[in-house]
Image (cartoon, rainbow, N blue to C red; front, side, top):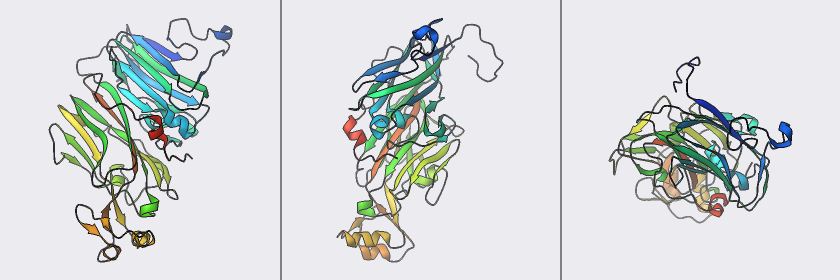
Amino acid sequence: MKTDTLYTLPVLVKTRWASAENPDGLPGAGGETNGGRKGRPFVPLAAGETYVMAHGEGVGTVRRLWVTISDRSPALLRGLVLRMYWDDAEAPAVEAPLGDFFGVALGRNAAFENAWFDNPEGRSFNCRLPMPFRSGFRITVTNESPVDLPMFFYDVNYTLGDSHGSDAGYFHAYFHRDNPTTLRQDFQILPRIHGRGRYLGATLGAIADTARYDTSWWGEGEVKVYLDGDTVLPTLCGTGTEDYIATGWGQGQYAHQWHGCPVADHPRMQFSFYRLHGPDPVFFYTDARVTIQQIGCEERGVLARTMRAHGIAELPNAGAGMLTPEQVEQGVDYRLFERQDDWCATAYFYLDRPTADLPPIQPYAERVAGLTGD
């Protein structure tokens, strides 16, 4: 189906909406309950329950997802897991917590809007990334939390009968959390995947270890994208965390079309941010891997005071060697040092196959440990 003009009228493409009122997306079957008078606008999701949000056969495209829930606590934002299956694949191409998939990490909620995701008023979740399939699709949500959810509202808007060429990729999303990260080992936004594809960007979350580093800045690490056989050094290399999301010198709360930071909680040093590669595509042909370093900087003596207060004799210098409190304070306006914090990421990408052979999502307890919510 051509999408370059609004006035193109396809011949064979059919529009379908799957919702609680018509979960199978059947013709003439919407709103059967209560005589069509809003008898089933939502479904409850008991703890442990899996619900099929939408499914279809043949060729087509998922075009929009919308969700709102009656409980937006960390338990549910991280406990509800979206899974999407393309064609006849047994493994999901998308496997991510609800909140993180829709653009806000850390089990928190915030109003924002970007090119592909938005959260109007902090009350609902939208995604408008096109998701092609060739022989069918299935989208499920599983309540992996111990909490029953009274109300789950949703719409899945899709079309059937689209024409997809051989160059149409399958949409994927991969979530991962490291709490804490490993010293001098870059956090993997996207572990190495194989095939031809396009990296679309990520929703990231960072909770700084204030007990160890106080309020010293955590975001000096560079994003690195390893393409098509890169090993030790990448082809693409950024200059810093806040630089990657197109701001600089720290980051506050903002939301732009391709980059933003919906959560910038400086008192608790918790940050949720995103970077989307729309106008600046990242293509790969054999494989790709995306990482970010955990590097901080010392400013105004904050780190040295914290080291002394907690009896920390040394911290790792960025790259090699160690730093004492005295060395931290001497010689330069700020010093870069290696650190360990709590990081998570949901990476988005297209791939020339419906599965990516990535590890399954981490258990619920690992996903929610230590989250404070709004």
